[in-house]
Length: 234
Image 1 (tube, one colour):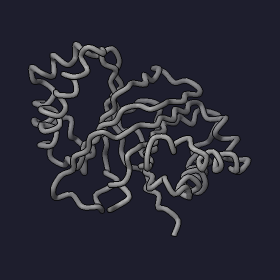
Image 2 (cartoon, one colour):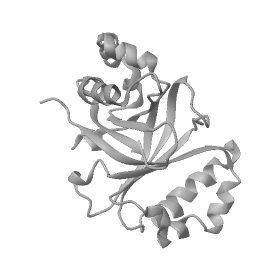
Image 3 (cartoon, helix red, strand yellow):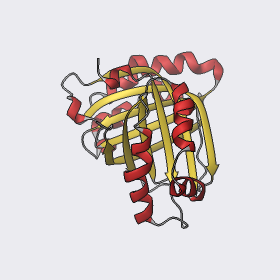
Image 4 (cartoon, helix red, strand yellow):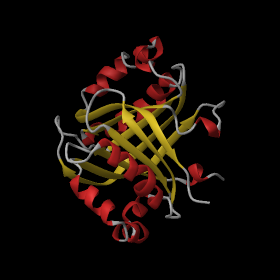
């Protein structure tokens, strides 16, 4: 069984460096210090960093597949954080915006011809929603019985995963303000332009889609392109 198959959780980190952190230092720190340190934790299986492809802020997203949501802030993570360098601590407190979330995986489907080398995907689209409690059953049926199957017809689709929020920490602010919601779906694609395809347009215009839109009391929709993949040491 691969590490990704064992991953029942996700550590999801949105970050906006802001004017007080140079782009050069930000990338050097994250690539050579911050992300590699977290991959020394046995329950952090992999990491991939993405840059916004939609012109919105926060501009950066890092996804860590983890064994379960609790390890995102567990003792081993806290030890790595506490033992970080002075630069690590300084930049974590200096960046304009930081949002760390932990999620629990409850649904995943992958293209039958997808290879391990296709991941992390070159492009991801994520959507997070807060749903009226009385409508959650039909909301989840919509994804499981219609929407994901239609998105899977989009050229370049590789995988769809659905998560439920376990916890979230926010420090700083961006404009517009980020809405942290209970339900998250991440769709992986091997190519860009997926939103303009007939298949994606069809998926977003069904009667059930319009019905589900009336259930929502919060939403967050973003598009990102792969920036860097990080490997576990050894």
